[in-house]
Image 1: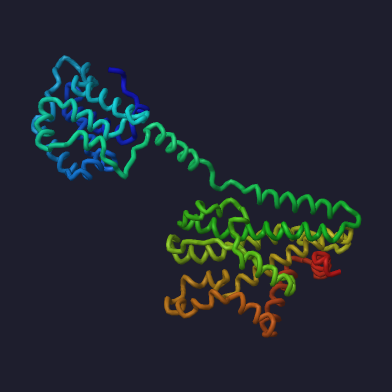
Image 2 (image 1 turned 180 degrees about the vertical axis):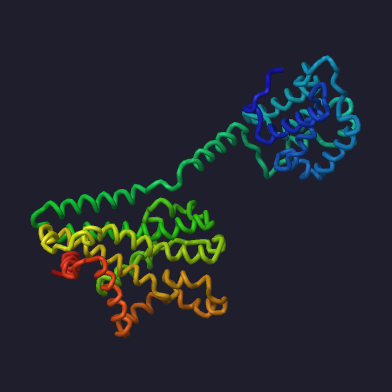
Length: 425
């Protein structure tokens, strides 16, 4: 009998052999017998043999129990001699013949490996003396076993293991790798920024090319802040959704990502992060962490704005910025968009991050009462900006207070916004 290797069997057949070997080892069996193998085959509830027997009206679970009861007192086979362990891996002659039959059945249907059904047929054809009595009592029709259709088709052990290895390798690959889309946007921002700085009279179109990727980068950072904090808080699904790759395409929503940001930009240059990450709030471990998840988006905008504002914070000489006026105007506009995004998102309105910070601490009855506003929060914002002068005045006062703290010159923001909308000149 040739040596047995996993590529000769299905995954369930390999498991049947492993269980048979375990039974033989526990019983200190001298050889591996058909009774061991049949017990292992019947233990594979997801195998073809189990399904075929059940379809033919047998009870394979009861059969497995009967085998255990019949052979249990004598541990299924004779005890091994004291001469050593040399016979431990030997197969009984009847099992060798059973395996030859099993491989023959597999070849007959064009299968490269033997399944648990093939092993069952082999055992039926070549039972040892003790197993023959049980098989006679069960009255299993060998031809019916061969011809019976089943809904479970076993797969090669080698193929299954290869797929498992690939899955493990894929899982080991870092899911937090930075998206090429994000890197491309950063590259576009850098190239256009260098052009703005180096050219004596750069085109306003370059301002648009610089600010737009810069704004999308800040959008990705905003949503990454939400996702990263949620991951730390216990929602690991954000990794599976690709939220930790900084890919803005993963954060898009038809209305929130396109329509509303454009509307707000046209209304007066308001930066509205329009991405959408879906957080499993039930997975977050505490109310504090839920609040932090909501606050993390505006915090990312604040960090981005602070980095852009470093030259303004370190230099109070207006003449320094006049030397490359278009470049600093574009930077000032990008900072302005970050500040408007921060102030806007921290408003305590349903649908905005400010409300998300408060929501974990509000009574359930209040949250249920405010639930309808989640769908109309942005429409309510448009109404407030257009028709409630006190709200608009408060908003812009807060925005310019922050801009003042960053030493950003208002005229640079105005010039930057004028060049950004070059098509209106």
